Image 1: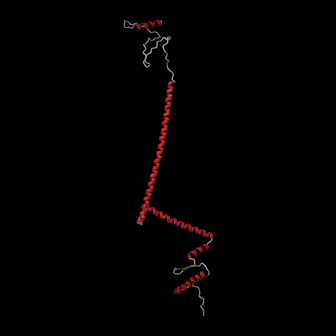
Image 2: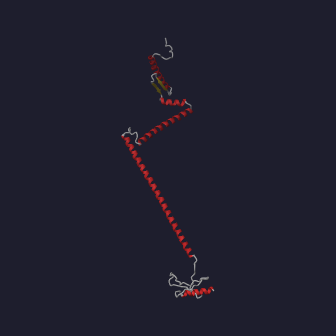
Image 3: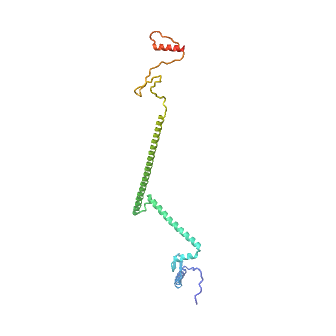
Length: 253
């Protein structure tokens, strides 16, 4: 009698189930290999047992076959979106790793979390700090030199402005002095000197020295009006006063 048809259902006996799995697994792997060789096909086979053991076969490599399968199974739009998502995910992962590395480096430069560093890493950190300190000092010196040059330039500008102002003030003072002297020369004389003339009735007293004071004898003062004449008694009255009184008395009459 031939072998009867086996009913396809789960084998309850664990031993029989494991034996059947091993036989059919080997036969399936053999058939996949024969198919890839005889028909020049790209075959990939992945098997997980009930105990989560992996069994695989790939004529061109499992990863390559899976990528080809993804390109063929998805539509072009979905494939592009999937590739963009994957690229963004990879970019985010790279940036995250870089950010963590920068934070760790910053903590090391601040003197934090140095317990896990080796001697070589500490030496490298020390060299970095020394280089940064040298650059900072050079930059500080350069800024100070630039500020000094700027202050010197402003000082020269202020000096030039001061010289120009001095020249301007001196010119204005010279012009004012010249105008003052011209005004004094243009003032009219209060009296005009005339030399001795024959027609004059009053003699002019002259001196040999120009700056000498002119001495004048007092002349009688003419008084208009009536004055009562009281002759003085005795010889103590001067003659000139008596003559003057007589003249005034006769004129008043």
